[in-house]
Image (cartoon, rainbow, N blue to C red; front, side, top):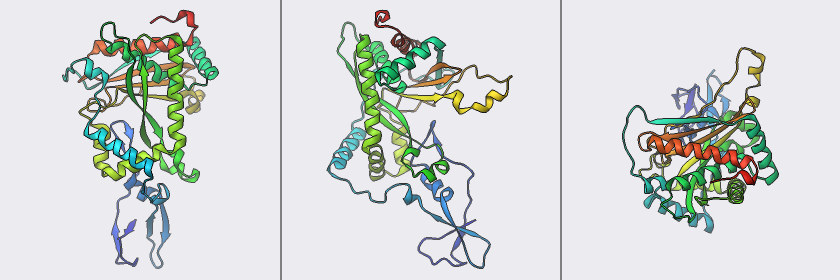
Length: 345
């Protein structure tokens, strides 16, 4: 397979040999990055065109069909562009780094994981509560992580709400034309969510934060802010530099990341045909030792039970703090699934 050279008439002397990689996406530090897929999409999502007199199929890239060619900004876009640039010049420091001295020790590994599992009853109750209150499971997870971290880093008797900056992964296929989504693969971009979480949160405060997180994510998906963020990153940096800033943030810009990965049983129905196969535990992991996030919360539904695990940067975060943080996040979701009278924090 050969690609036509740029600005040369397509004849038999205008081709260069190209190696086509048999992959659907490019992965960097645990996430399929939006910008790293551009080069591969030029090949994989190409329009084949046969050349007369030759049995070679030429590739006419049409990545421009996936993203708008117009990179001009409106006034609101320039405001966000300025804020984004300022965020890179003066990066935010995570609440954990502000409160605790990073240990920066390799020890026996980089990324470590704490895994916990909800009971079937608690899972059903939490899902029902979310449905009644118009809250997504992701919103409940973000609220739990924010309140738990505020509780972990609180100083003495200070109960003032702490501003948390979190990241949530977005499947970029939702912005593609339906006929291109299968070939686009699993491509992830990140959006941030901000919450002010009190350390001593009440039952009502928890659900208010969960609703705020749910609405915040929904607004970004429907307002065009996600694609605007992609245009801004293209304007500020090349995609190589963009990924370095997404992944390697010395300032630890975000407090944590979180993702609800959905119902594993529905995705893997074929496993039901094998009586001897059963999923016991599901653990998702991201290499976080050089990441802008020191913590990442993963939540799956497996065998009708919510499986939770916290990934943390073992090179920076103390094991005791990580286990306390994971346990409190887990307990908050469990208490939220119950009645208000059982809430204690």
